[in-house]
Structure formats: C-alpha cells, structure tokens
Image (tube, rainbow over all chains, first blue to last red):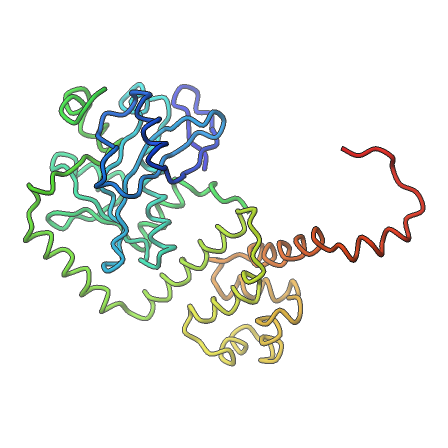
Length: 159
Length: 174
C-alpha cells in the first residue's frame, strides 16, 4: 500500500498490521491519538504503519461478527497530524476501511463492513466511501467494497 | 490530545468523516434498530443468489492467494493444485464440468489438482480467462514458482550431487 504525503504528493510505503495491547500502550504515549484505545471493548486493533520509520498513521478497532458474516468498525482514528486541511498524509482512514473490506472478503463475508456513524457525518461517509445507510448502520459490501480496496490498496499487493 | 468534543470543534464534518469512526456508547444505542439491522442481514445471507455466493467465494480465494504469495511463508499444502481445487469448489462445479469449461481432459485436470504435473502457460492463461481476469495468470504462475523456489532452496541431495561436477568455484562468500 502506498500512502500519499499531502505536502508534495509523494507516495510512501505503508502497511496494515494488528496491534498488541502493549504496542497500543506505547503508541498512546506519543499523544497523537485522542480516543480511548486501551479498552477491553476493543479486542482487535489494527494500525496503518509507515514502513520507512515504523510510525503509526492511524488506528482501527474491529469486531468480527462471525454469526452475521460482518466486520464492524468500532473505532477509527487518524493520528492528529493526519486530520484536517493541514494533514500530513491523505487517505489514512480510507486505507484502514479498505483493509477491513479486504478482511471481510477473506473471512467469506462478501466484503460486508459496517459502522455506527455520528449523525452529522453520515452524508460524508456515503459520498466518500459509497456506503449505504439503513437507519442505524452504514455499510458497504460486494462491488463497493471491492472498489474501495482497488482505490485505497490496489498497489498493496503487487504481483 | 483531542477527544471527541474537541475534534468536533476543531474540524469540519467532512474532515472528521475522512479521518474517524467515532466511539459509540453502547448504553445510548437504539437496541430495536440494531436488532432490526442484524435480523435483515441474516435474512439477506439466507437469500443470497448463487451468483452472489460465487462472487464472494472467488474474491475470498483471490485475496487468500494474494496473502500467501505476498508472504515469505511456504506451506507445501498451499500448492497450485490446492488453489485450483479451491477455485473449482468456489464455483460449485464438478471437476468434469470445469475441465470442459477450460477445454482440457478430466485426467489432465486431476493431475494438475494433485500436483502430478506442472501447468502449461496455456492452462494458466485459460484459468485467467475463465475467472474473467479476476485471478490473473501471473498469480497461478507465482504459486508454481513459489513451490519450485522452495524445492530449489531446500534440496540438499541436489547440492551434494552437483558439487561433484563443479571443478572450480569462487573462494569468497558473503
């Protein structure tokens, strides 16, 4: 996966990895994340990692809902410097969401990924990620999830 | 560091959506809406069309193949034949039907599945065409290559016998 630096449009190699509880405590010490990540509610946390320096660009907690054939994104946060107009790297959240879609295909869920949005953000998730809204959850699956994987992680697995 | 409220004040909604999924307090969720959503999801799963199932199966296989090819890990079980068998299974076809699909004899298909023969490039391309390019020939080729690379790297007997034929060799090694 390549992530784009906003300043000059230069691509940098990045990868998504699962984070251990002790890694998470170390990441929190950097003071670049504001949500409460060290919480037993979040059993599986992934990070988007910049290969060149091992820096964490963003974090995502997911729940694998096997019985529902779904991956639920419980929490996602880009590091403070990757939020807003002056962000250092673009597409951090997109790369993490696309990785969740990929996992949802690998688990046999047809790429089904959902999240409970803040009301004010619903229209933006729909326009940015092509998600569908059902009254409580936003979700993506099938072709739309594949399109997200192509858009954000196409160069992740060069063959 | 900014918590939820501070983030909301510092950035526009679009900027927030481009960078976050905010935490939800389970105590404040609409339980009826939640139950309804997951009820519909299970109903949708039960009513999936054969086409949807095949799409899901093939994408699952493709990404599993990609992960295996990308990793340095070698597993003799994850051979070309294993993934070919999985591909046919994902389509819900019988071997004889699939052999007909790609224009080879059932015996040749059986040999490929059991890794008793190497696939010709022609077969790899037919697999690519059959999958409508969802699983390109190069992925099938890399499976064969990964196995051959492992064989080459780990063949002690070959090295022992080959050594006898090498009259001279470089003195240095790093």
